[in-house]
Image 1 (tube, helix red, strand yellow):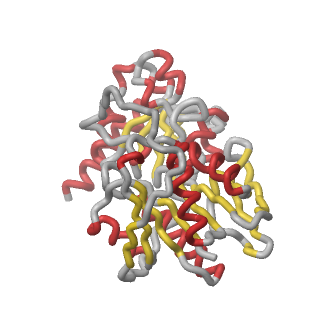
Image 2: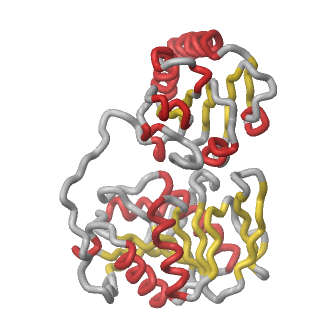
Length: 323
């Protein structure tokens, strides 16, 4: 009984998220006394596939099929189910991102499998099989017992550290096992964001709220993000006011992110906002209200006027980088 991890690629390249999944799968397979097998769908070069071996993946199943472009949840579900049957997989792991959220429920129905969406750590036990995840907008932890023969876990980004245990992987090219023919989806136009780091990829995010008072005061936030090599974000009131573009809106009704470091500047910390950023490894809050809810979620906090604190922070960081 193997552990299969679906390692999503972006234009034939893996991102840190895929290596987190590989690390998680390798450790889980070790707990189960099993083997972690990576599944790659779509065209990915051999050199790129071999990068998974750095994180303990000894065997990689590669499915290349023109029908897998564009992404069609129905066909991808069939391909993953086919691989799971081929390997007699007991656990299937994928990311808790938009792709994973589209695939995991379909796969669970097809395989009659229990599912734990948004896992944040390895199972605390394997008999019974109990996995933890955040609930109630990140304010509590739920322990979910998966009782079926096949189990599906979607892993929250940045919830598991990369663990290097280099091996030389064996790559097997297999048939995609598509039972639904070609996809009826057709791409008419592709528009890619360029120049800025995507929020979902950023390790560091600098976010501003209504406490910034106007769109004209965003310069220091952009400068801090640039100095740190991070992305900019905002709360919903800010995007609703038109101060920042809607694609920067983080929270329950916006983008749900999990960076290593999140700056909440002039953000009070409404439940809806915290729900979208609660999986961040470290949260730094700057707010002039010492009773702001954001301080309860933050590991570090500064009580003060953001318009005064932020320039000093930027100046100190700029000095530190120049030394």
